[in-house]
Image (cartoon, rainbow, N blue to C red; front, side, top):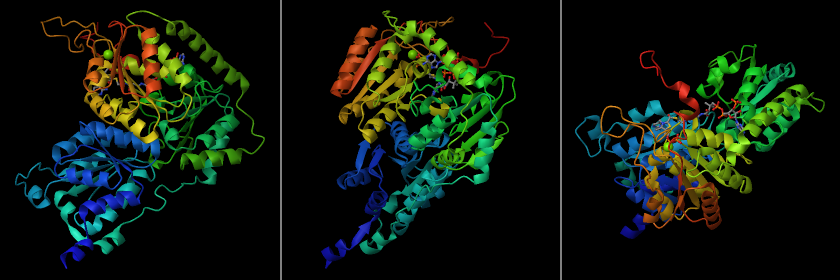
Length: 568
Ligand code: OXT
Ligand code: MG
């Protein structure tokens, strides 16, 4: 009798796996350990791709960017307390950036945790996760696993996407129940992020404001890239004839070389525009909150397209708020514009194009710089050509100077190909993002990393080698944070912002069987990157950059607090 009964039972492990499979979750980014080691093993055996990382934060950043790339929640799986905490930064990052992600964490026994009796890895994880994510749930009974996952998935992707925490206490995995009842308890989430159609009044109001403009501007944020409404956005932007400014991760949504692109005329369009339409972009610090010096003195009207009503009027008055999903909104705009919409004034577009050409011309000679050691522009000049020749490759980018200069120098040609530090400017997204990009898209990845930035996730080069992923990491090695030339004026310790001089990061890659290259000139760099992109072999290139080349905090040095007492 025993074997038959066994066959009719299922358990928490399998219900978790079945719930994910039923909802199309095919990849898990994790670090194994008690109580989720077997869950990972079993999930792998059941056909889910389970990628094991060296640190949960990197697995979490991978899940977060997987959510951005796919519009499905990226799943990160961690062990209790310390593993959970390691994953939490990424969960908060996902929430801040509006990426759908679920942090699934094993946890210790409720009865012991709640009485604070000192369980193995004791922590009230649900309470700690709550303020850092969009929603947090705990499942105590096997029959609720289906509902628990359904709620987590819907919370992550509906409305404004974000991070969700799902707490699974160890005991849950071993709970058994009737297999048929178990299967019936699972929930397939129907239409997880329903279209949100904007009200016709709001569409009309927005177009009336846009029509009244003499110098209109469209700002495309990463929300617009996330929407995967690429054609609809392109149609609207082209029909309007309005110059557009892509935020960092919206670069390539329309190509940077598009005649309406104002990326290389940023200061001018912010200052001189009279009507600004924000599409999936927020008026946060990256846009100087929509006010102050960078926005000029002339009066300005804002139109804002966002799925989150609370985003409106966050920093300045929004003359025309349009609440809806971006695909539905821009489609409604194009329809309401009809066939005889008057495009934005050509004098304005010409003025923007003139400024753009001036800036591009100013930069051009610097990109040819063949110095050794390299400076940023010389090194980025060759990488820019490589992306031009391989527009479907994914570019991952972090650092300070390495980030800010690469953003300006490297043109993007396709949507969702540029992945970077996001809203928080967080160092450490590099290897997790690169791994998820390779896994989710199958495309080659070029990760351009400051030497400091790389250090936050560097151990994952082993992960890259282990899964043999087509990732080429280029480290802009200038011996430190911002610059490698700081001196400690008061003792023998190295200055706080410098690293070992002449470090050879390429050797790290060789330790795990990948290809390591030390590149000291733009020519060497070009050859090595092309080789890596052609071969698809895990590669790390130590690009030797002049330690004096960078500037403090890259383009955002103004954010460092200053006192008259310490002013140099
Ligand atoms: O129009 P104007 O004339 O103004 O010109 C603009 C454009 O029009 C023009 N442009 C072009 N010209 C010609 N051709 C082309 N194609 C072109 N395209 C544009 O160029 C200018 C500039 O354009 P841009 O960049 O668009 O405009 P701007 O004014 O810069 O925009 C403002 C911002 C705010 C939108 C933009 O700057 C931005 O997006 N910035 C993001 C900055 C950011 O997030 N930085 C990361 C954080 S910095 C710091 O915090 C660091 N830390 C601390 C730390 C962090 N972050 N995290 C954690 C977990 N712990 C600690 C650390 C440790 S950075 C860092 C490490 C740094 O060292 P590394 O070794 O890694 O890096 P290196 O510096 O290389 O050594
Ligand atoms: Mg550096």
